[in-house]
Length: 340
Ligand SMILES: NC(=O)C1=CN([C@@H]2O[C@H](COP(=O)(O)OP(=O)(O)OC[C@H]3O[C@@H](n4cnc5c(N)ncnc54)[C@H](OP(=O)(O)O)[C@@H]3O)[C@@H](O)[C@H]2O)C=CC1
Ligand SMILES: CC(C)(CO)C(=O)C(=O)O
Image (cartoon, rainbow, N blue to C red; front, side, top):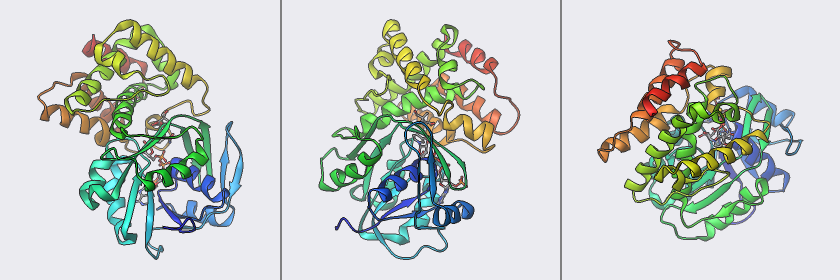
């Protein structure tokens, strides 16, 4: 594999767009793909504009829609929403070289889906926690730096992981190569479930997480997910304030310290609201709830572990998605009853 081979970035939104812009600016050839034709045009013609407090620059990028892309690629970064994984994989597989691999720069346990479709040996795990918003065609807000990790699904440290790490480190210099990528992915499942709860409200992530009266909700959600991770034989890892052990053991003082740290982390970002909130309130579209919380509930069923808080959360998010409920702090109040 030569350094000059382009990396194919499939899904050039908030996460894929930032990865592509930073890689291209550093001289690494990239090929962007997105289903949004206007966004593709803007990236080619005017460049992708990265905005916000971290850094501002514009980068012209080679970009295609899936319909116009040609050729095969050995290194692919998948950065579509979790519920689009299967469909995007079907589109990208004809462009994946025989000895190529896919890195999932997504939230969720998408590596399972990807591995089922192309094999574990062609799937590389990745965890991203930096914050970004797609604003409009050609414009992305890079809200804050945060933890990033890459690793093989069987925990080996391989040359291809080191190579991809070097690319991600252009965006996040403190990105790590890990021998426990599932630990990071499950840690993010725990943190992500808290983010889904904040998105029940119009409040920012920090303002929804801070108040004492809602902390039982975060405690219950975090605990359910960490129990599932334990049942799956995973040792979840912490990052940016999320402390998996605090939630597993339900140690109140430690959970409070962890929530305080997550609130402090999110007070510093220009991305004040989660991607889930943006899907519901701004983009007016379905969230990743089924591909993340739904998957957790399913895993719970498989282990006969009850997940009442996750189930209630899933129902409430569905209600907002289908217009029968409105984002409101009253929904978090309602969750308190299930979680106390
Ligand atoms: N944004 C963030 O701060 C963070 C996001 N993540 C995770 O990263 C993943 C990507 O999220 P994010 O970048 O925010 O999402 P975005 O919606 O900003 O970007 C995804 C892009 O992929 C496009 N797309 C959808 N389906 C396909 C397809 N089949 N082929 C090609 N392109 C497609 C989307 O188009 P369309 O909009 O029309 O669907 C969109 O332009 C998610 O799993 C998210 O949870 C993780 C950490 C932080
Ligand atoms: C908030 C963030 C960026 C994690 O910090 C995230 O993962 C999301 O928006 O879904």
